[in-house]
Image 1 (cartoon, rainbow, N blue to C red):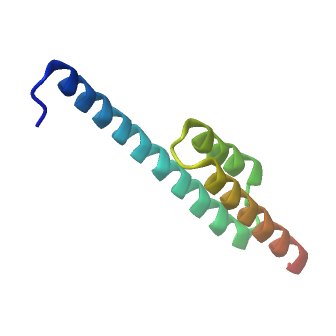
Image 2 (image 1 turned 135 degrees about the horizontal axis):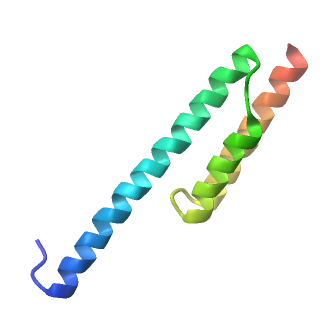
Length: 85
């Protein structure tokens, strides 16, 4: 455990950020899962999902390139579902 005042503050900040990032990643996972289940019954909302993922990428919760890759794959899956069904 940290002993110096500045190290204690840094530990508190790191814990806050860890919890915030964890919650943000959970939101991204949930929206992606909701989108994928929505593909099956036709209620997929790409715009809302993209907003959630891009926001997480912009805030650094997930890397920007990963966010872009996820959005691209979801758009591809939506296009495939629309053209097949």
